[in-house]
Figure (spheres, rainbow, N blue to C red):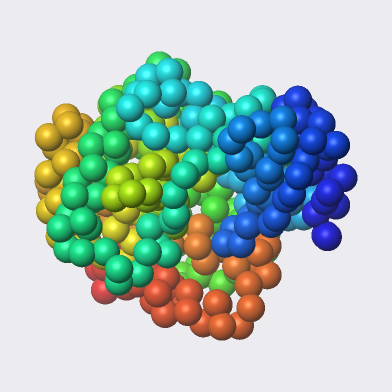
Length: 324
């Protein structure tokens, strides 16, 4: 395999105390676009093991992606210590730049459940998910805002500085990889900055997963069994979470989720300033989704889908900010 497995896989397992001679079976799990992921069965472990292998040396990545396997392990440790009621995997060894070894969680991705879920089941699950997300957002940072891996430099004292720095990093990546945006990079940067006043309303760094689309929510026996793939987590505005939770939709329409979130004390408030920030976070996610096309080498079909679903909405948002 291009990943070097099973050599790299064996080395990752050894770091977690799993001897290769005890491995009964392993298989690659489909669905990821960044890491290569394996499910492992070992005679020395009662439970399943999941191993993530980072892209090989020399494979280009976005700036914010540097060190994100460490971020994922860190996220699970922080949640287990501060909000143990929120179900997540357990990191079985300290993560490295090359790999992360963690426990396998029961359940299937919500995105695979299809039409087999009743309305009552879905409403219950959305409410339960809201309570879990409120648990994540109860966790506060003490050292500032931004990505904990410090891939974009030290944590920042203000959310405005941190977020605009995050946007700037993706714009620099667009230039580096030659990705065409709806407007010139400098103009996009200015438009984001011009909308930045509402960011000053955020004064407390809170834990944000930032990738909670249905594929990263596991469901087992009618319950949310785990929140996974937390490698893009940061300290920031909890409202940013709502972008992937309502991907290509409006979180304000998700009454069951919001009811569960608010009942559990979720701190995010959707008001005028909140809606302006939500637009910023949506645009930031659109930038990431489009710029990563180049290093991921997506095929023509995926690129065309992203042009419709991401680039066109981003263009409309930028036009609105520019007053056109």
